Image (cartoon, rainbow, N blue to C red):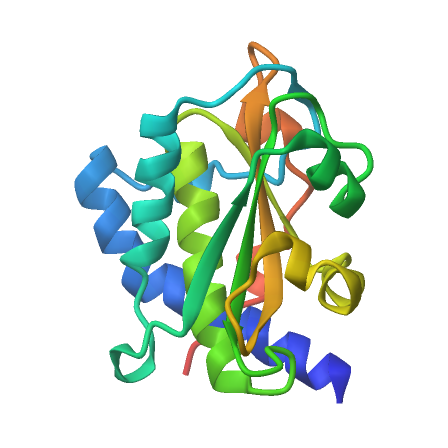
Length: 192
């Protein structure tokens, strides 16, 4: 059941990126560089993010599409470093965590998870389009929902679905050399 969910999640996320985000980023960046060259950052360096950039990243998440325009998500920005390290222990000084929560228990409602996933991808790509590193986490979600919902101030009736980590990158980092290898299109795409 869990594998079916994640396979569906990945497929729907890819569909959204290809058919929804692509035109938006093509207009705003003059191409698809933010999508083609993205990578899940691992080489964060210390340094804070400006409030203006954080607002722009959050606005991208707010503008994400959702089924029937329900927008079931809420974003909790964790700047408190000691609290953030309780969620992701190896956090680099100045990194910010954005916890995306959804209505309900968050983990069994596929429609809410898909809607939140669209917002997650928007946050992730917006951070990289602004020159920051970003990484998506789902591993800490169960523990976060079990013990930190109240401390994080998640809205009543919401559960965390994913976390986007945003931070500064080492100079010279690029999406090609820092990215993990990807499968070739020939083994991933079927044409009929």
